[in-house]
Length: 475
Ligand SMILES: Cc1cc2nc3c(=O)[nH]c(=O)nc-3n(C[C@H](O)[C@H](O)[C@H](O)COP(=O)(O)OP(=O)(O)OC[C@H]3O[C@@H](n4cnc5c(N)ncnc54)[C@H](O)[C@@H]3O)c2cc1C
Image (cartoon, rainbow, N blue to C red; front, side):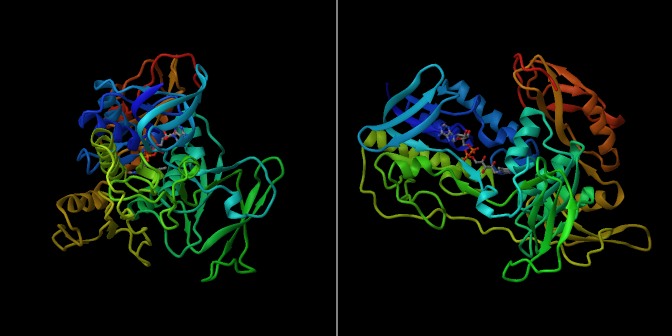
């Protein structure tokens, strides 16, 4: 089998690279994806917060993915799903070895290859937490997949280790799905997540964030029965005498992401110790001829919008290479990696009058003073949206809710949903109860209204993903 361009991975990076190469005139191209659908990690990120730059809207992960999937489909860019790539070699031609159920193991020759395989989470083994090996220890991303795609709960009483955005988001997701999240432990003196996520994922639900703390022991034989959480000193060593036993049946680990490097290394690409991904030049070409890289496989990105921008460039450069032949490789150029966020909420903050804005990732600290005449004086906001947010927050706080609705007769058990607008914070529990009581019939499409007037708010609940007809039983 021969083609001009192969893209390995059908997440946001792979789809954006394919679309950009197509726009440059490459018609003979193929996306190889090991999962049963395109979309990558976005399919399980059912929360809001994607696409503010690319689409100037706040979308959920599946909504962002569906927009790209639609563009791929409109252009009839082919993809092979349920297909795992096991080896890539560069050169003229590049050779990709892949396998799936229908074809078994097969090889495809291509003039160029774009690596877009994303990243993986650091495992328990990589963290050396002592204790037994009971069931109930999950990486946060695995738990996210169980809940948001498989429609299953990994546990009921949860401790989260790691306060990056994924840990914070999973603390909220588990709470919204009915679990009790006992605490989030963070070894550093700050959270690696955004301030707005500390507010809307932890503070909103009264989940404690223990900075300078880590899990030092896992208890339980068959199933997790609890963990020991200890304070750490400035060298991050546990301080004896600070141990606290926390009863739980589940430990979620959210302790960092690493690019999926097997294929890059197998191809002989030189690796960069700083980004943990392959070394690339200004054209995002690795040190192996004809192999380009983008997205989380190149370096871990916080924002999907930046993944899309970088991947478009990789697609264009790969197309240039195919159409115009190779140029001098030039010199290595390290991608610009945004500084890791180091967030703490201001100590001693009066939550009634000092508000962290959750309107965008900046997280302004806004002060609201009630004047004698009853009007509100709002300071500290850097945009109009911030002022409106603060005003609402002290008078009638509102939130958008994302969750899941069970599906009957579909190719998946649950469909992600969101409230079509914000609802009063005090109505969230009732909204979730109504969502939990509904079972939709497949097919369900993005935008379908599944509940009208949820919790008497006059806001509807709409699907944010597609569930075609299938035969997976509902939960
Ligand atoms: C939990 C979580 C929350 C996030 N929240 C936000 C947010 O609120 N806002 C935001 O902007 N960004 C967010 N992000 C970041 C953003 O979603 C990612 O940066 C982006 O999805 C990365 O895109 P990618 O295509 O590089 O990787 P992925 O989306 O991981 O796609 C990689 C694809 O490659 C496939 N693949 C891997 N290996 C192979 C192989 N050998 N053969 C075939 N296929 C393969 C995988 O199955 C996958 O589909 C979040 C990320 C996570 C994990």
